[in-house]
Image (cartoon, rainbow, N blue to C red):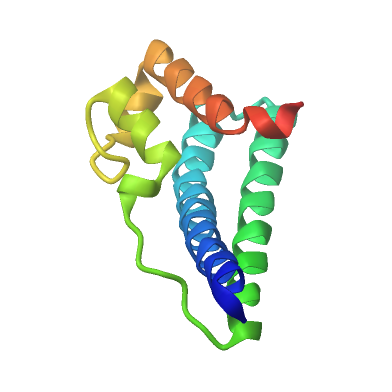
Length: 129
């Protein structure tokens, strides 16, 4: 395989491990966001459908990266929230981790809910182009 091949293989392991973490974190966090959107905007079917589609896309991407590891017979590297872009945005904007985020308080406050929506948009800007 040579040094270049070994470097390429390790690079792909690291990159795919970070992606699988972020896609998993994305779709599981969007479950909570979807709950909030349904409670806050029950009459906005288009908005709810857009969040549902986004959640489904994140889950599809997670399954794609998981399958890549499965086909190779390997496991992803263990990564945590230090590699999570949504984790960093949530901490910067709300001063807490995703797990500590109070969904009820976010739903109850229009300004906080808007900030959460903006954070989600920031993480997906590459997909909007």
